[in-house]
Image (cartoon, rainbow, N blue to C red):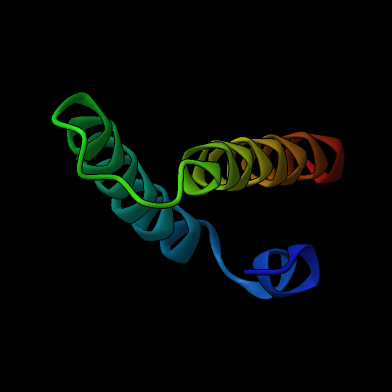
Length: 68
């Protein structure tokens, strides 16, 4: 998912995406441990997506405080 698409989503949707990405990361690490993972670059891509979501959620939190 691209950053612009992430910014358009609500906080609840981002939290749902975050749960899905964490589950995917767990599965990828499990596949890596048992040598069934074909694309190891997917792990770093999922980690970056998780970090992007955390960043966007924090930005939303900061802007909500500034408005209040």
